[in-house]
Image (tube, rainbow, N blue to C red; front, side, top):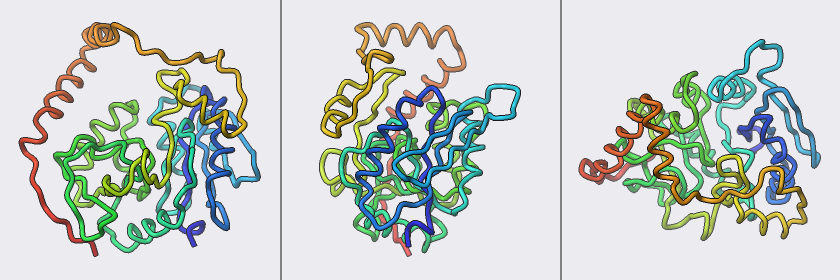
Length: 287
């Protein structure tokens, strides 16, 4: 049974506490199955319980005399997972459709049965390809030259693999970029769902607006999701995200003032614009 083989890991921090109740209300509503797997909510000091869900709050910073960064909290939170595999989510992935639990269960069996598979992305966000077809028509392989081999979008992970990819001084953005390079050095398979069969807009396995919060403010599209699910909250505390007219200029000035991030962006741009030149098509046979 799924609930014995996998955990749901919700990565969060205390400053996103206002997301927890709507997130878990929607998870509870849309997880249509006879039982819910254990849920790990990764927090710093606070805890949450609701909707009769089996939630364990990690409170990873409790008893530590310094404020841990994102990757340190992430690593420590993963230690609370007791299963070999888990579903990765974040607190602002507000689920707006019935989750295809049967298919997720099938994909867990796929990763369990093949020791080479470490990751299966569950949405069409994250890697943007190029991809290779596999012998399982539901799944595509993410080759090394793909843009974002791994991401922080909804996915099934082998726990030991993810633990090996996280470095303690990286933020989420750096993790996705440099973690993808580290993933490419592994002799394992990183897969994603077939984008022609499954997407967030059409036939999603687990559907959510990408994402509910942008740069600390509400995505304006989330209002309709909450309204249709009788969720009320005070949007004024965060406000709504508005794309700044000169955001690219401001970003460039910010990056120049921080040389480390500037060179990361230059590398990122070069990789993005040259990845297709080195792409190779290939069919991947899964066991």
